[in-house]
Image 1 (spheres, each protein chain N blue to C red):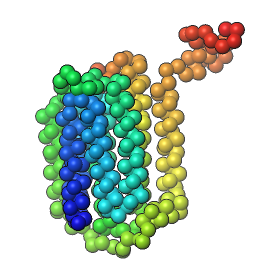
Image 2: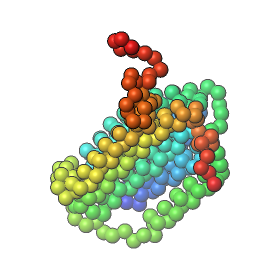
Image 3: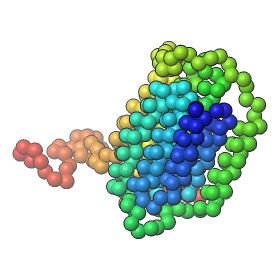
Image 4: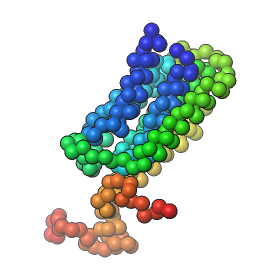
Length: 186
Length: 101
């Protein structure tokens, strides 16, 4: 049974991954990636980590919806109506990709993996929660700061005009230099 | 169900991601390739936890870290795309190779 579920998820995961780079339409590519990553979440659930698997699935759904908006906003050919090639060095990339897969597969079959040590806890969600709030607290704090830095950095990068554009390098220009006037009395 | 199968799936996802990240011109498509690579890392980490050391919680923490890496990569990728598109109307890597060489 588990074997069947594995294949049912693994085949679409890989097929979705391939489709991402085969689809002409950016929107379709996004949803191919979404289906692939949802299957990845399913595999994680199958491996006995329901909490992390569901988190991955929920996160991917949100992320891919955001991505679809970006695709349509920025990309050259959002709907794929005019077929065009957007790749460079296709052959070299394919060779490197196949080489990476062969090397990884060789490692998978040649490495003498150790025997299973210990048995899974009755509640894996409890295990990861206790770990993150206990022994791995430093990891959790670091991840939190990374996310905070990402929020700040992404906002700064994506802002069209910041306070230095408005108030000058010393932040002392009044009134602010705005392209259009606004507010009371300005 | 064996460890090998899960690791092969992870290797497949990673290899497809490598192909995408290397071959695509569009910045967002490159990000999609990187997402697939991190997806492979997640499958491999979860498989290692499940098949080799289910008693060790650190294995699950690696999955959490990979998920965070995915989110960070996505957010920063979109921010960089927005910044470079706003500054230069550029949305492909081939038009932004000033530092090449």
